[in-house]
Each structure stands twice: as structure tokens, then as C-alpha cells.
Length: 405
Image 1 (tube, one colour):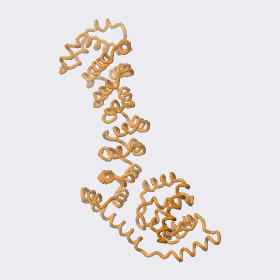
Image 2 (cartoon, helix red, strand yellow):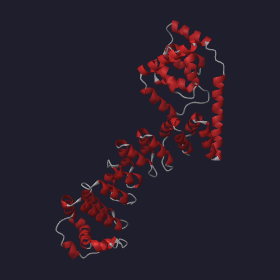
Image 3 (cartoon, one colour):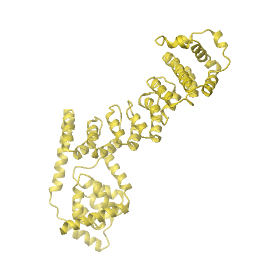
Image 4 (spheres, one colour):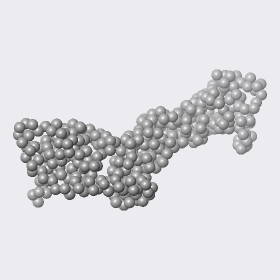
């Protein structure tokens, strides 16, 4: 280790001897400090690591800050010429120094090292994992030394400020953005969607478009992404307010705009057809009531109706099995949103296979995208039976009150 540190140690002592003169000549190449005689190195009695440790223990905060600056200057002055072994020596030196350094010094070090492509790796990782965002932020946003594994680990364990910093760095990959979407808040979502170099998976877009239902600006940012899956873009535009939809369509390339507009028109026609089509539930109701009287109406029958696209039979069977009036179910079946239908299905304790079949058959030619269906499945899993039953009781009371008014 002494041999490896000898050249840095020599440079450090040389820097100390001529510090005032050296600081007045910042514009000169610091690499000249390394050009010292071997005899000077021979006079060094201990390793630089030991001397730095001693300085840290006995020196003031200002002394430690100045020491850090000198070591950092030495590295930055020759970083473009150092090999990995030499950089590793600086990594060890800085690693010793930053253990007891103050936050303001660490924050300064982070700013200086963040843009350096070959910055000392473990030092960068230590700064990135710091709980203080003033320290971690610069390297999280910029340092190319951080790997995907580093970023995933930090995104999983740190708070929203760290996630926000990561969301703005260039060329984010799916494994990282998946964690950001899973743990991030709305501020993280906004910055991530604004980061055009970030890669977002279909599952990630499904979460973001769901969040965009409550945030018009987020909806615009999601809709402007050229990598958003076309089905999710369709769903986003269907749910968006007219003004948001018009702004998004206006900025789309002509080819994409025409494709999206055609999809929207077909979906609107399908929904309008389903909503306007008169439904006669009387025959279906009598049929499923007969099955119930015989003890033959079970969830598997509802699943069979849904998979076969038997709309009236599906609604009638759902009404009996979930003890929910058809008048409550009709608007839920016709709504572009799926959340409402989860309530009677959870209250009846249906399996997800049955619920997804009902959701998929509501509008002919307008099935849900897989990521959206997965997201709804997660919501269904979180919904407790007791909560669903309370909500259903409230709906029944409201329906009864409106009917008698």
C-alpha cells in the first residue's frame, strides 16, 4: 500500500509546503505537483492514510474542509490521466477523510465529483447513499459511476427527495423507473415524465396514467411521451377533460394523431352503442332466478356468462349473487372507469378471474390493456370485503332515497 500511496503522499506534502503559492495559481495544471524527486518521497515515514486520519482527529472543521479541497483538487487536476489503480488510491484516501467530514464539505465534494466520468467509485456510492439530499443529490442526478443496481437500491430505501433527484438523471432504465413509480409521490411522477431520456415500462405507464386522472398537468406530460403504449394513451385521452385532450392531440405528430383519433372514435362509438342500446333484463332476470331457485346459480355461472359476452345475463347474475339492484349496476357497467364494479364484486367475494371477465366484456371492441388490468387487480386485492359491503349499503340507501323522492 505504501508503494501505491507514495506518489499521492509526496504530492500531498508538496502541496502543503507550497499551499499559499499553489492556491494563487489555480489556473495552472495541478499535475505538476506530482513531478517531485524520489528523495522527497523517501522522506515520507508513514502512509498518507495514517496522516490524514491524524489530521481528521485533531484538526478543526475548517482544517478538514481545506484538506478535502486539496485532495479533491489533486484528483481533479489529473483525473483525465489516472488509471483505475491510481483512482482507487484516491478512493481510499477520500474514503478515510469523508467518514468524519461535515455535511457542508460532503455537499461540496458531491458537486465537484458528480460530473467526473471516472470519479472514485466507492466515494460516489457513499455520497449517493447519504441521508442528506444536499450531499446525495448532485451525484444521484448526474454521476455516471452509479450503476442500475446502485440506483435501484437507493430508490428502494431512501425518501422522496432522493427519488426526486434520481428521476431527473439521464438515461434511466426500466428497473429504476419501476421503483420510482412504485414508491414515488406526484412530484417524482412529474419529473420522471418530463425526463425524456427515461425509459418507463408499460406497467409503470399504467400507474402514471391512473395518477393522471386527478392531475391535468400530469395527464399532459404522460400524453406527450412518445413511448406511452397506444392503449394507455387511448384510455388517458378518454378520461381526460376535453381541453387536455385537444392540447395533446394538437402537439402529436400527424401520423400518431390520426391513429389515436381513429381509436378514440371507434371506442366512443362502441361505448355510445352499448350505452344507448336498450337492455331488457326481464328475461335474463327470470332465467337466473330460476337457476337460483334450483340451487344452480353460482359464481362459475356468472363467469361463463361474462366470457360468452351475455351482457344481460351477466348483469342479472351479478345482481343476485352480489345482492345489488340492477339499477345500481347499470351505470357501473356503462362507466369508463372500473373502480365502481369492484365494490359489488368484492362484497360478494368473487375471484379475480370472474371480476376481470366482467370488466373485459362491458364494451365490445374496447378491452382493457394488460397493464391497466393488472393495476385494477391490485386495487381489487387491496379492497377489503368489509369496506365493499359498507359502500354497497350506502349505495342502496341512496338509491332507495332517490327512488322514493
